[in-house]
Length: 521
Image (cartoon, rainbow, N blue to C red; front, side, top):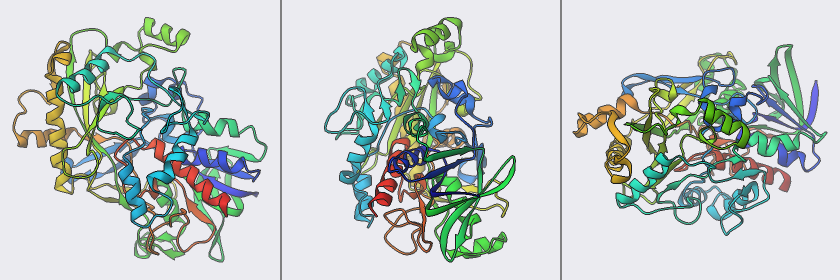
């Protein structure tokens, strides 16, 4: 039986930062990760991330059939690997609009306003453009410009400007709206995951133990306090005890699942699947939120897209220089637009100099581009529940996409605008035809059908262990699980609402804030 001061479950964005920060204090830390080391080259080569989908490095989740999306079961890739989903995402560095964080604080989550979080964002970052009022240097996470922007991505940004939208060279300063090239979490053309940035350096410390292939099955309780974690590997069942705290960093699916398997969750639901109730916490697994994206795709008639990324010349360029097609993060450019009357932009665009259809599984091999409208101010809410008390059974994922009609309207308007971008001179010179949805799509009803049949997750689930000021919240503002001593959650599941941008940066900051709260006590 192992023992440590702290036991962390999950080596994703939050868990890697937390392991680094806590072990730096001299405390003994055990980090349990169900996946394996990130030695697969596809976890390093930026353009190759989708090759990890539906492999042993992917939890390979699917939702229930979604009635508003033509009863499709949506594929949700989640990283089962050191670095978690930061080892298989598109590396886009976005923080989200300051209003979202200020609203968290206004709703009673002390310490979560933009002014509280900006120093944490900056401290974790090594901004390759240099320091500023919004960016830091010297942190573990390298944030850089793309080394070889594709000319099609540059043209897509130019097209947005021709359509009347402003340029934006930094979406993480005081202005989010507009269009430009995205910065990425890459170091010298190689992915800089949370494992690369924070965990690998920390693993040199003797007081940090990282255990891979360790599937957590239960939080061990002693007199109403979390005292350790039960986990299983190829050798059998083990328990690691925690003298100080247990921290769950498994993400918006695995953290609520482990809480419920441990008897912490809605009592009626737990009883229905045969789990003994330790604490009736009605909101565990509730408030599930995800970004839904719908792409327009266009055929192009010049051989300059990422369709050629695996040819000999680009391969040699990447091996020798770490530049070229393979250094692309695929979602190279984009921007933010406000369609509604809310305080934040509600649609984010992801421009790719390639076809990216059905997660890349159904993409044509020819040259093409994708312009995806992403719903980032989401009204629909879903839930995570247990399928059974078997800790190896995938939970039931019910996002209830488009259950709020406002979400459908926004995606329709977003897709219409994507077509306007394609019709601007900067892009039109490359495009030979509209591949998806096709020019036969003209009416609102036809656009709605496009959204219902082609939308996919952008892989940003959050909210299922949401923090709040009341006892019915899953965690309080210091991420402590209500009703259980010695237990916290530090990952995307604690967000009370979703940020209107890619979620890896804030997920790392959540790990940082958890460490701050722990070490301040």
